[in-house]
Image 1 (cartoon, chains in turn purple, cyan):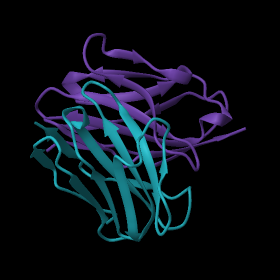
Image 2 (cartoon, one colour; image 1 turned 90 degrees about the vertical axis):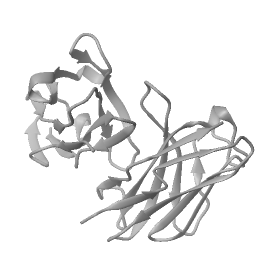
Image 3 (tube, one colour; image 1 turned 180 degrees about the vertical axis):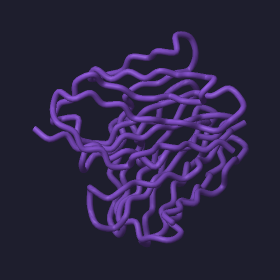
Image 4 (tube, helix red, strand yellow; image 1 turned 30 degrees about the horizontal axis):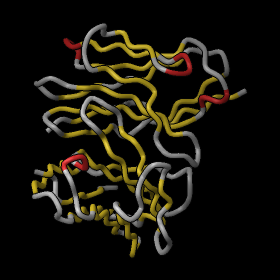
Length: 111
Length: 117
């Protein structure tokens, strides 16, 4: 079964700073990749997804992620964060009919 | 720690059958559990939010009589797909949140693949 690693569980940064969250997975087959966001008190929402094609994926709210197959990575980026980006971010990898989530990154943006 | 067990992982059954999926938090108490559904090539969609001891809150478009949710204890929530039909075939995943409110982390089960023939 696949596994997903997200490092630096707690991230604190100032508004306008750039954000990059790492996601690495272990699985040898074809995968679908997702980033979800959970704002305080809310349920998961999809930020972006990758199934095939251009490995650079653009999502909502200015987020993007790049799939690097050779590195088994799908890192999430945003060039300039806002206070409203304070949330928890989950990377998810789907392979062989299984969906695995990382432990999440708690991101706090200071105004 | 913080393991969520979902059972069964895969079920195949005939049309008209009712199917029960269990979601258990193994080493923590979960006030809130969420049930999601994923269609092929799509992302998760929230079906309902389940709070222990009270009725589940269903998302718009989700039939509560079709998808029965019971959260009878702090460690167990069940989703029953009643009189399942082929269009109910999907991947169902639950998550559980620590007792303690909205800022607590959420932990996911491995999902259940439901195939209705």
